[in-house]
Length: 138
Image (cartoon, rainbow, N blue to C red; front, side, top):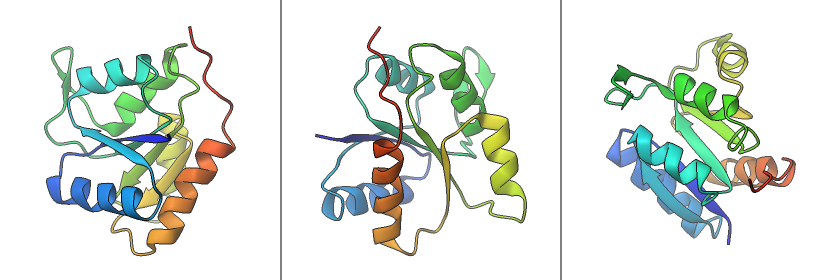
């Protein structure tokens, strides 16, 4: 079973994404905005992909305020989680943001909110998982 971790601080977005992914994609979904939990789940190999909200307003890691870009950088810098695909999800979809966010974070993809085309949303996630080298179990 393919599992998606949704890192999102808006409960409505979390619910909408969860519903789309379970109903349309047949995927299993976990959701949290707790950075410690994100790291634990990622390192534990419990998920196949992470959907990461860029602007996490309440997230703190090791005493510092962090956003989705920073958390993705942590994940990509750790050999245990470096190969875990991360797709950034953001409402800040200005011209040039996509490239900037992808380059800065090392993420594997980018989806802008609101998600209008549910089928395309699910397909992008499934394609990213399929085209991604499997994470080595350490």
